[in-house]
Image 1 (cartoon, rainbow, N blue to C red):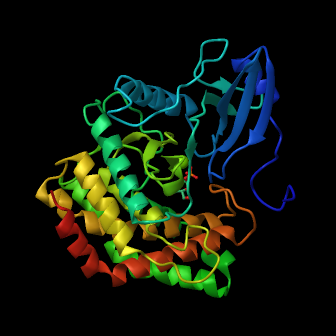
Image 2 (cartoon, rainbow, N blue to C red):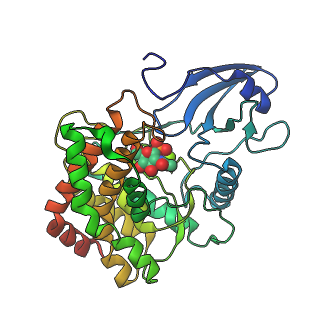
Image 3 (cartoon, helix red, strand yellow):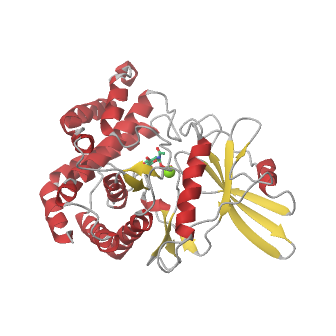
Length: 368
Ligand code: GN1
Ligand code: MG
């Protein structure tokens, strides 16, 4: 990939940054993963005969304006997990401190970096392989929520105001000049989809304002590749990427997780036609409901299908708005990347709408 052909920035390897955390010893750095927001690297630290791996990340300060607040939330949540036995909950990384005793390092250019332990003997997936994996993901998300259920919301910052509030994304979209879309058929289709969903876009936000849905500590980004499985791929041992842990709705987490896991074509699917796998959805939800316990009132539970249907619409809207604005938010590999991603999400949204009755049946079967 050539620099300049995308918006991913340069590929410089930040050895000087690692020195802010580990002044001595040999280090090796390699790029890691394909997140759409931050840059990640795996760092191998050698000291004598010992070799330790760690994950170094550059926090995207275009998205997260106050990285110190992201780190404060993350440190609190990690402390909450580390106070529990690993048998009882998920394994979580440990943050390394800089030589100056900080959880992050602001470099001379204004970039913000953090370093955490690498969770060895784990692997991620971009598509689930079977129903048992979908159930394991749901079980892990339920555990995540259950572990944080007694954590006070008051100490957490709202690090990304408006995140997952669909009407907020619609208002932002409405303010964008659509002329750049021209007559492109895919762009025209995305615009038509956005209009088709406009009337339902407020359903979850309205329920928040009526006090039916209440904020809790959410993950905010539980997409499939943020779940780390044991090497055998059977059980989930961790749920990483704690950037968006903040007050929010469990509905967002469940819906976003289903959006990602049950889209069998994958988020980056190149072939037309996203598909929604209702069997994976049922397995994920039943795993979740069993491990999270009785978290919802009847009214809250009744709003889950609406949240599940809305999430791909919202992400389609976010990808398409970013495309119109010149790819400022999500990393892309080529100029039509966000447009294609938007199209995939709108296809998924339509597939979900076509299966709403089946979704209601699945919900009824999973109720605890
Ligand atoms: C972003 O950080 P990453 O790449 O896991 C985004 C999510 C989207 C996701 C789509 C802070 O997640 O909301 O669902 O891309 N995160 C943020 O792949 O906007
Ligand atoms: Mg993320």
